[in-house]
Amino acid sequence: MKTKLTVRVLFLLAPLGAAKGQEFVAGWEGSPSSGYGFVMPVFSIPRQGTSSFVIRPSGSYLYYNFREAGGFTVVTSPGAALGVAYRLRTKKATLTIGPGYESRWEHRKQADGSKSDVNHRGLVGQGDLYYSATSFTAFTLNGSYQESNHYAWSRAGLKHQITNKSFERGSALALGAELTAQGNRDVHQLQAGALFEVGLPHAHGSLQFHSGYARLQFADASREARPYFGVGVYKAF
Image 1 (cartoon, rainbow, N blue to C red):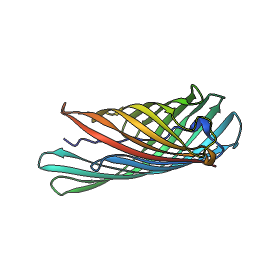
Image 2 (image 1 turned 45 degrees about the vertical axis):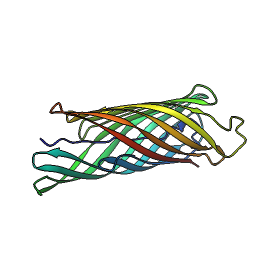
Image 3 (image 1 turned 30 degrees about the vertical axis):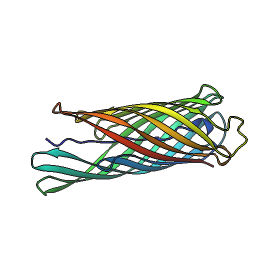
């Protein structure tokens, strides 16, 4: 059986409530055997205001392996996508929601040494909510659905700023927790973890580190547990 493990990460960071015109987001999450990395500029039209449209081109790279009869199958899958969305900002919240289109080039090396190349294409729907409960505590909710392989991904996160509560210094540290659910007919994955953020309020940016534990269940009812790690960068212009 060829089990397809996909790690979907659209936003490792969640500072959208502080968006300032154009943005840049990049990140990676996974482990040495499987992971997903991406870069994504975000263009707002207009640059300021409570209501805008955003354009989100992105490039990504997915890799993973899985066990089958005779050994391991190795898969690599670079991809490109273009998304458009509507963004609504209020004093405490930012909501971004809209469709996109993605193309992935999957390269698969079977356990027996044979190889195959497949191009997967399809629509993507995604939404992101950032809510600032207080000046120091924020809640995030992100989700997406990928038509090409019927893959759903969702994450809820909470973070709390623990230093620079006067907002006078150029950096601030925050701690948080996150829960992630993702999967399709091949695999379902639940993750629970923590995050550590170095915020740069004067530079309108941040750096986040993620770590936790993932529990996977495959279509053949087998299960596996493994740690995961992540890093992400955000910058607003």
